[in-house]
Image (cartoon, rainbow, N blue to C red; front, side):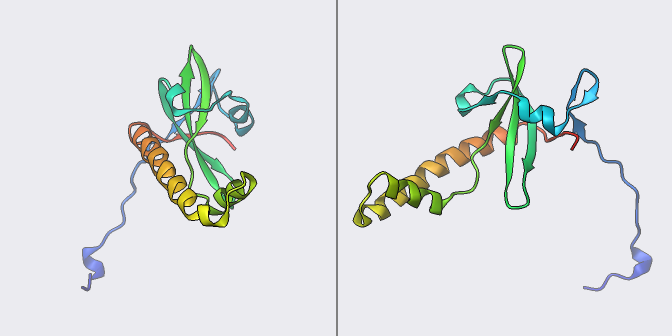
Length: 131
């Protein structure tokens, strides 16, 4: 399909972003890292939004939420780490013959966690913090 240039145009569009502010100032990465960490999804109450933060090698998704009037952060389930699972199984004394079943079970557990985190993320917006 060819599109002739006389049919195409460039438009300027507005984009709205939500930035998290504390005491009127945009939250910095240093302040974000100081938020208390919530360890389980069941503890996530009153979500404000999510933040993507990480390194070039890996980016994590964190949910910012409040508990008792205090901001917290919760790290969502990341990609499945088969190498990490294998290391854990070896450390726990799994025999080679048990590894396949252990890996299958770990993948199923991860899928349940991943699906639950995705459902939680679907209802909230991305927040931006200052670098």
